[in-house]
Image 1 (tube, rainbow, N blue to C red):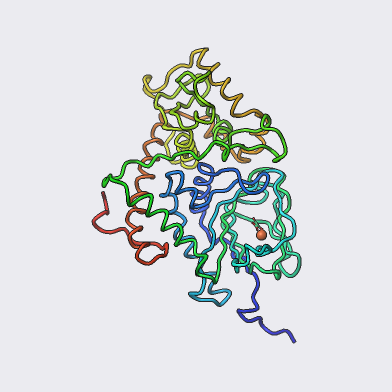
Image 2 (tube, rainbow, N blue to C red):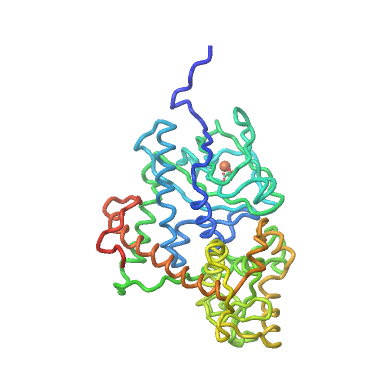
Amino acid sequence: MATAETESERRRVIVRNMLSKEECEELELIHKSCSTVGYRPNVFSTTLSHLIATNSSHFIVPFVPIRERLKEKVEEFFGCEFELVIEFTGLISWARGASIGWHCDDNRPYLKQRHFTAVCYLNSYGKDFQGGLFRFQDGEPKTFAPSAGDVAMYTADSRNVHSVDEVTHGERLTLTLWFSRDSSHDEDAKLISILSQKLLHRSDKVPQLCLPLPASSNMYWFSPNQASPDELGCNICWARMNVLGYDIYYSQNTSSALDCSELLLEPLQLARGDNLFHQPFANILHALQVVQFFHWKASEFPTSKFETEASKVLHLSQSQKENISNLKSVFVKNNQLAETVFRPVIINEKEQQSFSWANFSAAVTAWEDYIRKLHKQLLNSLPHWRTHQSIFSCPLDESLEGT
Ligand SMILES: O=C(O)CCC(=O)C(=O)O
Ligand SMILES: [Fe+2]
C-alpha cells in the first residue's frame, strides 16, 4: 500500500506562478544590464557580489523579498524550518547552444554544502525561447516546460538527477538559489561584509546617483564557443544595445590613444538612425541600464506627439557615422551572432516604430528616480542587515520616507 511521503522523503516540487510578472521583468532588467559571460559556454550570469563590485549594489533590493519567500517555501516543503541559509543567488541566462547533461547539484566535493535548489523561471518556453526543457531522470514530473513565474525546488542530491535540453532559440532566463544547512556557507554574511566596506566608508551623506562601473572588458566578451578565436565574438553590452536599435558614439578620438577595453569606461552618446541623442552617459553600463529600463517601461511612456526639442537630438554627420561603424566592427565582430544570441524573440514592433527621443529622454529621468529609490532602500536596510547578519525586507524608516 502506498503511504504518503514524509517531509524528509520529499524530493521535489514545482510551484506555478510563484513570482509575479513584475518581479520577473525587474530581474530581467537587472540581468540584461549587468550580466557577464558565465561559467559555461553560451551562458551569462549576474551574481549579487558582482552587482556590488560594479557599483550597482542597490539592485540587490528587488531580490530580497523573493529570496525570503523562496527560503520559507523550501523550509516548509522539506520540513527544515529555520535551518537553512542561502548559499548562492544568481541570475543565469542560457543562449542558443547552452545545455547541461545529467547531473545533481552537489556532484562535486566542493559543492557538498548545497542541500536544496530553487530555480525560478523568469521567462517562458515557446514564447521567449525554444528548447531548454528541464528533465528529471526518474520520478515525476519527468519533463517540465518552464513558464515565467514558475519555481522548481528539489534536493540537491542524487535523488534529483536532472538535465536541461539545448536552447535552440532565444535566451532562457532563471534565478537560481542554493540552500545549505551549514551556516558557514551563508551568502548573506559575505554580502553584508562587502556591502559594508563599499557603502559605509563613503563620505557623502546625501547619496549621489549611483552610476554603474564596468568590470574588466573580458568579462563582457562573448565568443560562441570558448575555443573559437576572439575575432568572432562581441561585447555583450554593445550587442544588447545594437539589437534594440541603438548605436554607440564616442566623441573623443578613438583611433589611437585609447585601448579599446578602456573605452568601456569612457563617456558615450547613443544614436539611432540619423540621430544622435545629446545627453552623454558616463560609460557603457550606464547607457545599457537606461536602454534596458526604457525597453522594460516603454509602454508606460505615452507616445509623444511632440518632437524632442531640436537641441536634444543632433543630426549625425558622415564622419560620426563612420566613427560609429568603425568601433562597432571592433566590439561586435559578428553582427549575425549578436542578433541570433541577443535579439529578444518578442520585440514590440510598435514600440520600435513609435520610438521617440522625447520618450527616451523621459525614461532617463524615470531611471534616475528608480535608482535613487532602490539606493535609499538599500541604505535604510543595511544597518538592520548588519545587526542581524541577515538580508531581509525592512520597512522604510519614516524619517527617510518622501526624501
Ligand atoms: O535552469 C535550470 O532549469 C536548471 C539549471 C541547472 O540544472 C543547474 O544550474 O544546475
Ligand atoms: Fe542542476
